[in-house]
Length: 511
Image 1 (cartoon, rainbow, N blue to C red):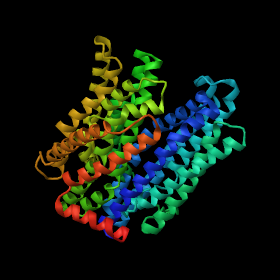
Image 2 (image 1 turned 90 degrees about the vertical axis):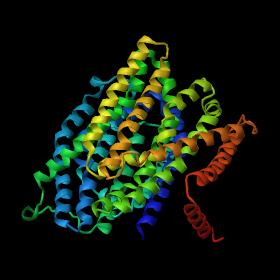
Image 3 (image 1 turned 30 degrees about the horizontal axis):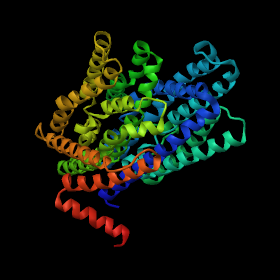
Image 4 (image 1 turned 90 degrees about the horizontal axis):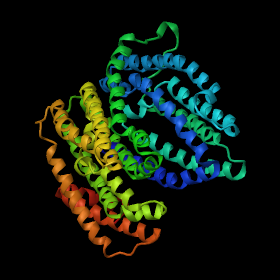
């Protein structure tokens, strides 16, 4: 299978997973809350938050593992690739050994650490046990994620992931319907899925990268402290970058709660539903291109990297600008149908403030992954942490000294993020890849033009269509999506790319 075809399959598979998760999420979340109550459901988020914090430690060792293993594997330097592979495994076991006692203490003494109603205390402790079991199992076993990454076959991860989402839906619906609803069913379901997915990942790694294996015998162990030091030396900056990202947007709800109250926090949380899915869409598309870019960088093929980036930027621009324009055109109608008890206009404005930056950068999202591919994560981490500090400081200043209130919380992080991208991300990635500093700004201009044009067209279409129910809303959204795809293909793609796209569609449809 050609590298180009593998990447296309990766993109399609990742989008299928995202669409499945969105559809299930919109239906399943209210179903869970209705059956176990909003209070019990909150502990699901809380348990996952504890794991997120623990993952900051794990990411310091693991975040760059796939990159280093790929670089050596592509060069057929299997001994060094195995040194990284084994070092990550043994390093993770040490992390598990260090964290397992605090986790057990947390579960046993949970009622003394957080406020848990007595009637659901046992259920919540079981929930935490399942969630931490998933974390320790995924951390303590070998890094089987790298097999599909090294071979650029991420579809072999995406398809099982989509199936697991469907299983989760069926499992929770069945247990909540047949048995007495309990919050720990959510954790139990997650554990079953974790075990199955880990088994699939292990099989994929064995089949796709047979040269990678864990050396357990004492005489052949090849764990290298130098490799761990190298991985952590790069990976710690990825952790710092994640902290910066948390400062940029992850603290929005806490700031809102402390300074503006629980009601404002609830409104902001609802408004972030669509921006959250937009972020997942962006990540799904760009992550599908990362293995190919890393492989070509390992080969030193600059021309191939340039083609990879050009293709990735055009694809993300074509796909991402359409939902942005639909949200701006139909956001108020969506929120009035989804949460009729809330101020749909306010939710629409807050959502637009959160996604506005994508009008400029949706076509250049792939550049975030360049830092990892070229192992220049330190510079990006510093930029991220600085922008996070500026965002928090500016948000608090505007809340205290102006009347912007919730609008400041929603809009400041977007503005700071956009400034960082324009002044650092675009020129820095161009420099690291050996291109002229302004190489990617043309894509920004193209993305802006496509976004503005789509918004104008969609707002015009909106005036001609009836609304008031879900059928009319989805009809309008699908119509806009089809028209937007045609407009973007004419603007973003060149003549040869349009012909190739049409040819592929015709071949698939046997026209």
